[in-house]
Image (tube, rainbow, N blue to C red; front, top):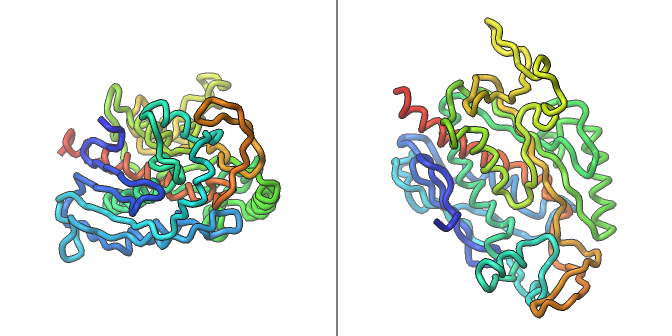
Length: 351
């Protein structure tokens, strides 16, 4: 296995490199007769594309998706859907200075250890550019789960140590950081600006809320839905931790506090995050991911070159100051892929 395939029944293969001709995905297992157009996918890609904020990479990519197969007369046919996104604004010359050194925090060193050499142009396959293909595939998954009333919404909970205190969902789309706290969003903007001017970067926390998820999704024992969700989110390059429900806070609770009571009207609390024994219980799914700071920074860092000699490195070029907010649609996409897959798997259990 190459590690480029995700899912069981709803299956996605992504391909392509940051500075290659294109990136893309092949989606298998999508049910037939679902209305789907390039515009449905384009809206998701627009949220991920670079160049939207002063703190974002100035790389100008249209991220225009082309559907090459699997659609007829505006509906899915049930056959593989092939998606193509061309790279139009790659500047490989900016990476020539990095050809002989390993960038701290990147996959340069580990990719070289695995394959014996690497594509130094923007990180190649390890680049965040690959996530455009995930978002395109995730847009199709969103259409599938939307047919049964499921919705996935991610937002910025924390950025650079500034945390959203007032979770007002109507504010998420009203600021460029997808933050549910408008005052916190202003502070985040200031913190990002300061970090960028200092040649540094920031990490943050994204929370994902799934509404309308039916009970019963998930498989014992190794394919628990929380295990698959954690794998999906951890597969995103910048993610270093995943919490579900109370998460690490559960370790500091007593059982009488942590256990969610069952009542005739449902669960009055949701410390479980909508999942019990790896199977959804009908409550909202609540997940959080911890995102590390962007490793490409202008501040000078210690590293080594291909000869193993110590060198100092300052990374130039076009880079984001934080993966937030561009990682928001990527998180939504990965959660949607898991939900679409497990929904189809559950259909095989209970017709």
